[in-house]
Image (cartoon, rainbow, N blue to C red; front, side, top):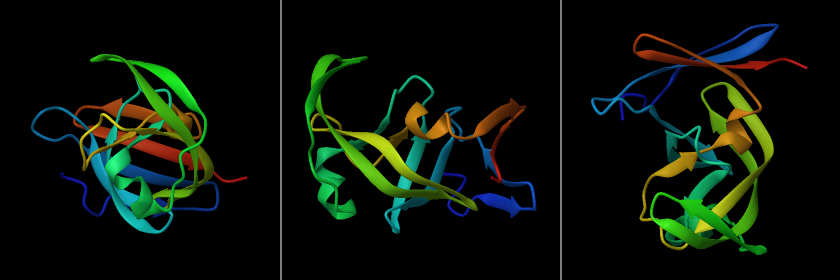
Length: 135
């Protein structure tokens, strides 16, 4: 994880986080879910933020309605939940849709589009920039 404390700035117009790629070419960053530490793997192919079931209670998450998700390993049953707060650097998101996945091993949490659609993101070279515009 090259981003244990992501490079982050805040201004009158936006909050911005710059992430470095790891050796495998992935963007991994440490942040918070419901004020508890979480390691995120950014995944634009994931519909939701996806949390391994073994970690859900750590964040105070309850299993909601089951649904079928199509994954690289085939179709699986996941359970809906909502994250009260998700934070990476100075970017804070509230009431983020998420899925609890019983078949996913800890500790990585997929930072999917339910979170990423709330920010602008651009990639240049080895850096991915996340920007949350101020309301």
